Length: 101
Image 1 (cartoon, rainbow, N blue to C red):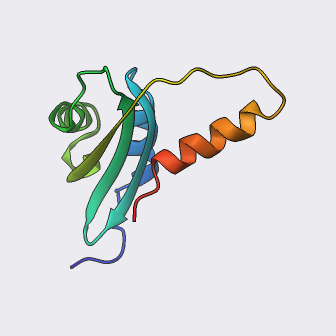
Image 2: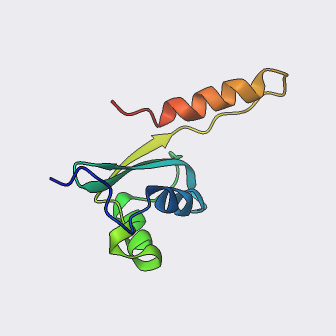
Image 3: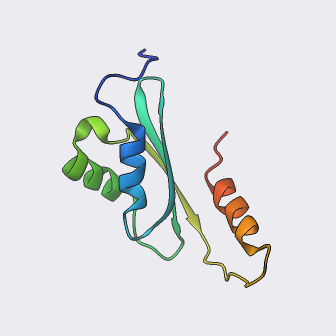
């Protein structure tokens, strides 16, 4: 197994691409056990699936930048409250969506 990141592979490039997909709320991409992996959060009512995300990455970034495994997290839409502490609670909620064991 390759443990070091091969030349020409950039997880941040794939992550930024996924974050640019309209239906994606949040995304995280990393290198693990010789493969790119991703965790992507979308709203529950979106029809986006892992096959579509892989196809989009392959078409626009190339196979070398396409995650082999994508974990899709469907989250229920939430309403945001206007208060001084709302930005910290939103950040905490967003970061906890993509925490993978």
